Image (tube, rainbow, N blue to C red; front, side, top):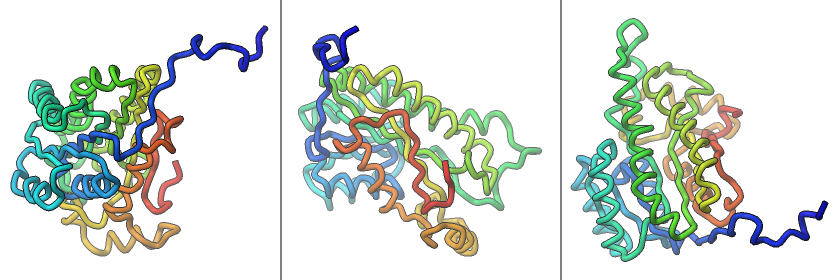
Length: 271
């Protein structure tokens, strides 16, 4: 039996490229406000060209593009609509003259983190679960399918899905949202397995309650304070801190990492 060091590299899958962040074209879904805006700003800071997807936040998206300049474009699309996502990706590629290399699946479909005003088990319906699954799993599937040809041709791709720590620590039982994000983690791992030979990595970054986004604005201060007291860092994670963790999975430093779920919540949850 030959030692593995004697086997020509041609007998293995061809090596993929390792693009620096400043060489990438990154699509951020739901990128006009909240966590998405923080991710866009972090990517722009590191030199990437960024496509800001939005559904109804046109003014916020245009303001962000005006502030950040020519390395940012805005694209309206409902991520749950495969045809709209396909058109969006074509528009981005026409704008920047190259295929999308990286996708951050961040869009959140009609959800507010308010533990006092949430569907309980005796009132929640399957429609609640279907709506969240369409947004989290369906939206990610649509962006992956639309960008896959360009990533495969380049033998490079980075897909980062935004998850939650609630399925490890359901401190507030948001049944529909948590189930959808658990499904997204499953898609993350199965997609990582299938796309690895193409030089495409698929990972998840999961936060807890962030201080503060539009979605968490309804959360009472005492809840933030309670979380802070229970984390080793004695603080609630900010959108900016979360965004910096996303950058790791786009950088060459993570080139051997795929199918993983990185929990970014100040140490509250040990995965």
